[in-house]
Length: 156
Image 1 (cartoon, rainbow, N blue to C red):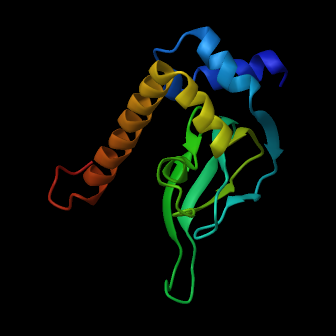
Image 2: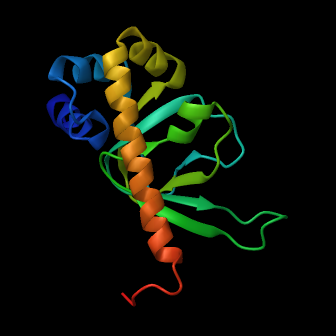
């Protein structure tokens, strides 16, 4: 992928809906692109997280791995292009709440949480739109989880 392609994938993320190209490009030029191979661990549950990611290409798995306290691993979701990784820690600065590994080769946009927050704080309107979009994405995920957990809902 060339820089134009990676920028297009970045700018197509639902996180940037409603932002002008200048604002999106400013966020983009402050990060970098990282390539990951299938099976690479992007984050580990319980570990401090200093970066925020957006999937540009490929597929990732979000899970709770088997531990001494958890008798089996738990698959939570899969993420693809345009999806954020590390958004919980971006919001609350806590360690990673899940583990994330690549299912395929991936390209990821990566930026330090601190720098990303500085950019959002510097332009409050950009921060407002970004966080509205992030909230809408997270609510959508919760609604889907609720449907999956509804034992008495219509059969799918």
